[in-house]
Length: 356
Image (tube, rainbow, N blue to C red; front, side):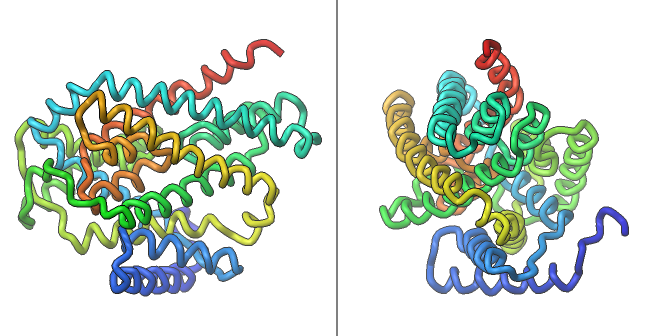
């Protein structure tokens, strides 16, 4: 079977139908970011119950491609100058993420030293360290495997953390009545068919180059970097149609939801409970850190909460986009953190545990 084909076309179709129904229900209920949260929650629930759900990788890639392009349109020359002036705050955000991950990993190691006694000391260190790192699930799992970690626990920790952050923060912001604070609108608002076709072509090329180079999140990062570059240069091709953005959010939600299989729930329940508790604590700590940065930068605290939140880059950026909460700043913080953690996680691990 070719690598691009799913295990079952019918599973993919039924999963998408379920996701569409959940999204429409969330729209009717006026939940935050309904086109991502609805599919994410519905797919996760039925997957945990054992339903045969499936996410098709090319659709997920296309969703990341669309979202990366849509976010890049916010980086007009004026916005680029603003983000560049915040370089010191972004560096603080990176340092915060590394410190938060170290603390999370150390706490997991302390709590589960007895529970995971079957692991060797080095495997316990690598498992808890990379489970705590605030990075992408797939990338952290691959690095953890090289260091002899128990990869199922690492992957489970990242999946659960991203799920909880993605669901909790938007609902908390809606409950608090926080939205529509973004004065930094995308540089182009009208959909131009020929411009959209040209934009699609150059961002597709960027995504394929990133994939060829083996970079993390190539479809998201490639589209984002290319769109940022052309928008910063003052070129305006086209806005992204709302329906296309909604569809992208839906397939991203599905790709997150299908991770939560029955086997996931049975993977060390105590470990998952610890990760859940720590995730909520980290959200609270990030709210405090965001407030501190807001005092220093004079930006809205919620923008910096999303910029430093321990969620996935696409999910936090989508939250900022839909709720209009400082999209370029959130994207810049999350992208720089992602890159820094990917580059520094393994060297910091070696430095931290150089001594037995």
